[in-house]
Length: 224
Image 1 (cartoon, rainbow, N blue to C red):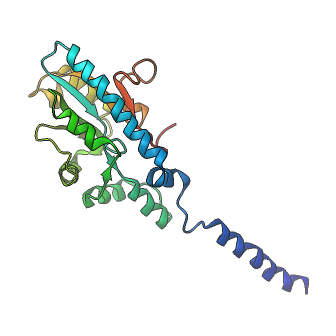
Image 2 (image 1 turned 180 degrees about the vertical axis):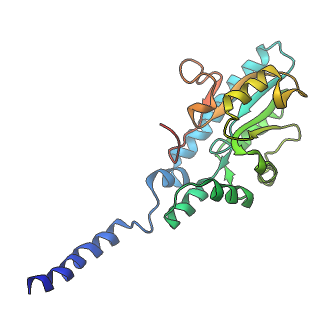
Image 3 (image 1 turned 90 degrees about the vertical axis):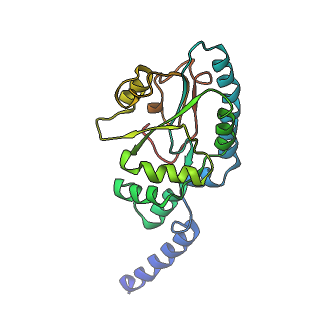
């Protein structure tokens, strides 16, 4: 009799605990924080607003004729939290194939504050260069997504990833040296870098942050 009563007892204990935890319906805290919290949205807006003064000062004091600002795309300009929601509900993680399908859907939103910041930049002699690890084969849907969101400039440049060897270190050097894909444009003096991970910046720590390096919050994924 004890064995017969044990199964329903376990079931009674387990089922309520699943209902209370809401595991099937509740998103991970890091995704909810990005999608729902005022803290995330205001941190992003704060970063972009503070950056305006720093960039304005950099441009004013620069004697260089060709000035650029380098921005990552994902979780810096484009909000891909919906992709995270969909993968969570499927019980799946990131894959390059699923990510490529997502990019081609052109459904990413905007990180809070970035539209106003890009509008500010268009009023200054600064070339915007989007430096992203999105694969170069997805360049056109990426541009289309930005165009739909009203943030694509006619003179914006894109350095997306060609292959695994095409690191951001290599592409940053192309920007400042005028080599590789930047031969036609020539070298640029970069007044600021924007990203959501340390790999988006040439100087990974120290005094540069808040002056020429500006970090956006992204707790959803990364290498820590």
